[in-house]
Structures are given as C-alpha cells and as structure tokens.
Length: 265
Image 1 (tube, rainbow, N blue to C red):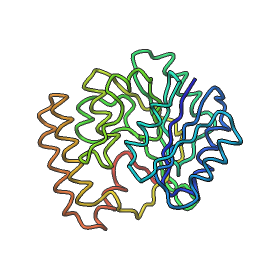
Image 2: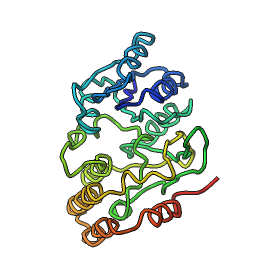
Image 3: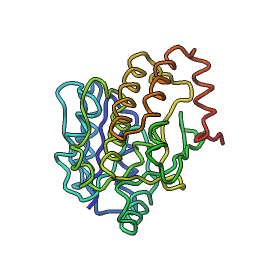
C-alpha cells in the first residue's frame, strides 16, 4: 500500500482536484491522508466530503494553523503503507504517477526515495517544465534543493530513520530541503525520473519565498545540512541565501526563470 500525505490550508478552490488526481490514478492500493491545517475557508468541509465518498481517505484537522511540517508529521503518524507519497493541495498528479514510481523503487532497492520532473502551471495553463538531475549527489544538494517535494515517493522506513520532518522555526519553508539533507547524511539517496508526472502549481510572478525570513531559514538549513554531510563548500554557499535578500524582486524572478532546471514551453 501507498500512503499519500497531503496538507491543505485555505485550498478550497484546488484541493478536490488534487485529491481526485490521486484517487483516480492507475494505482488503487492506496490511502489518502488529508490534513486541514486550520483553514478559515471551506477546505475542511470539502475534505470531509471527499472522505465520505471514498473509503481510502482519512481526514484529520489541526485546530489552528501549525505549518506544513507539523501537518505532514500528523499524516505520517496515521499512515499504514510501506511507501509514502507527497502531494500538495494545489497540484495535480498524472494518472500513472504512483505506479511508475512504485515500480521504480521495487526495481531499485538502493534508492530510498524517487521524485520526477514536473510541468509548471498556473491559472489552468502549463507554461514550463522543471527537471533536475536524475541522481543528485551530496555535492549537488549543498548547491541547491534538487527535488520537487510534492513529486516524491518515499520508502516509509527511510522517513522513520530520520524521524520524519523537523518542525522548527529555522526550517520554515525549508522542511523538504532539511529532510533531504538528513536523509543523505544517513546514506539514503534519491532519484529523479526525467518524465513529468505532476502538474506543479507555481505563479511565475510569486515572490512569497523571497523574504528575509525564508532566506534566513534557507541559510540555516544549508549550514546545518552541509555540516551533516561534512561538505565545507556548503558553508560558503550558505551565504548565497543571505545575499539573495538584497536581490530586487524583478531580478529575482528573472534569475528563477533562467535556472537550468527550468525550461519554458
């Protein structure tokens, strides 16, 4: 069984589409664990309705907004599958996604988790594709986060090895990056399938991650993660996160779109 874990916060417009993309896929032996993270809109009611219609669904709720790491850890506590897939409430999985990834892990016992490339979309339109290196090395990891978090399928045992997500102030918006650092420090490696298996929602004009707080958290995550991997170069590269604070908004968007992993369509 695959346990799909999804946190939703004020996602009433997209969460049904995200859930249905998992439930209507070609891999049927699954459970979808959905956590409402203290939403103020009708997200929780929608999740309850989804759970009523499909017995494979589990719905949990935070009484207040506690953040992604806390919500995902709550989902993990309820998960029963040997494999754990991530899903975001505003993304859309391709029908074959889970089957392709599960088959890959079955045939590659040396790999702890597998992600994929993803099409970038916004306002109902695909505008690009994001594709990282297939076998990210520790040296790649200290340079950038080489995985698309909601595209990942983990072996549950790997998540248990590192104790799940780290829920601390310094990992805000870097929960996934911190997790990948800790997995790699334990010798657990990931892989990226080159085929897009996900529609990844990203507004090309969004700068919500380009804030002083998020950059400081990225700096702390890189610094600590590089120490865990014993990569001195990572200490120097960590300061790029702080320097990025001073990059103007328009230039930041231009740099982001020009990154080698992003291609316009």
